[in-house]
Image 1 (tube, helix red, strand yellow):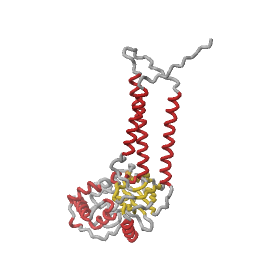
Image 2 (cartoon, helix red, strand yellow):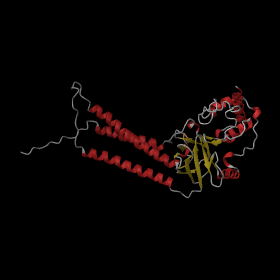
Image 3 (cartoon, protein in one colour):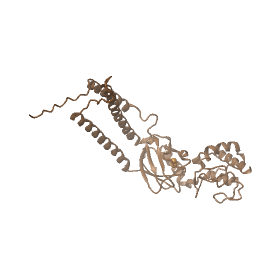
Image 4 (tube, protein in one colour):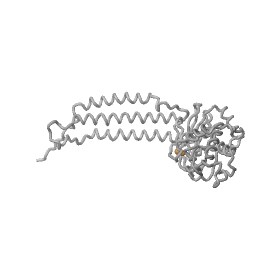
Length: 360
Ligand code: CUA
């Protein structure tokens, strides 16, 4: 006699379909909220491709909300429905569910479709970024310890501030001079690694004028957090003016024309500034107490180092000159006063402070 196998009816508990309906409604509400909210909150879209990246971000958020609901709500529901009955021994084996082909089909098909949609969506955005749309401007961004510099076509040398003209498709090639940095402009949603010997390319089209941040997103040394630099998006006329000034000037060394009233400096104010702007790279100890650059405690009278790093005599004017125009040597790069956001009175105060140290 052939034995007849009785297939047990799949038992999903009494409330399975109402709970499923609840998940569907809750998910629909959450998807609506995610898609209509200004995500990411508080960060403007200063240009393309910020809009398409935000759309992808919201899509991901909506999908995640649905998956979260399905996983968490069913887990709670099944936990309650199939809980060990009161009084049953602790090693009771729970209800075993086998062979639910319909369920298995859908929990395979839905994630597969989702992942395929997600892949196509993100590859499309990535391809738009990689393929030139007839770029009008190409800029090179170079990271160093600790700052960013930029090379513009027809401008001799490097400039310390990035300016971009409105509505102009721009290619940015990013690289690094020393260690790996991250090039990140949050308002454009663009981020790329700056790797020595490698050029990474991103493309943007600025649409909202303003002053934004370029931030280093890769831990790169003691003053990593100081790598936060201004980026200006301006009208094409304003950009043309700025560009003409750069092309006419001598690049990173700047004009350097304005005299600094060295004797008007205050050591107290200089000490405070030193703590904010210099102490990440310089100690106030002797020359050899290096952090990135040399210790500056004896800069004006150090028999072991009678000259400044640039070979000049240690006079207040020459120290001010280095602070103003920055310096690049075997210890690394010190950004200019413009990058460090130091005014001429600031420089005078710093020189006064350094002079007071050397007198001790
Ligand atoms: Cu450069 Cu962090």
